[in-house]
Image (cartoon, rainbow, N blue to C red; front, side, top):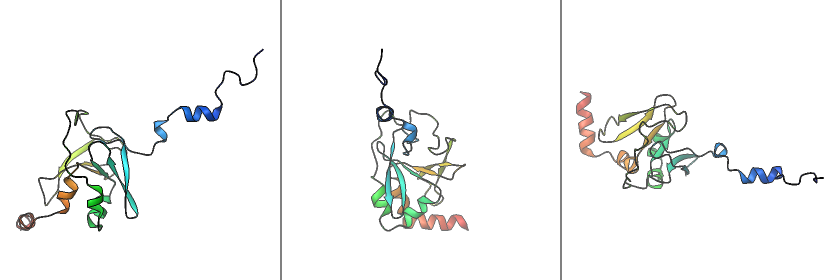
Length: 149
């Protein structure tokens, strides 16, 4: 005769023994699929990849970071040397809603490439691009003025 509970794992032990990735609130990087860390910038958080340093901005977060006092310096780790595995995932998808991201460029700095979600309004920037985006040069300002006329 077996004792009650013998040979079974208690419910609490089962909960701790199984890692349920669905309970993890961190996003996966659209570039290399690594988990992204949360970085606090003032009263909100931005997601940054622990591997490639890429950053995911939910709708309107990019503007908040650029206008914050030290947000850019705190968030952007600078250009990262990409490994051979970078971009191996093919088409990039939104970490929030899984829809395909579209490649776009900044209107005043056409050398800055971003991946944007047309569903949620989020934007993905590679490491180093946020710093570059925040530093509009005089030449870039003049170029944008002449494009408007």
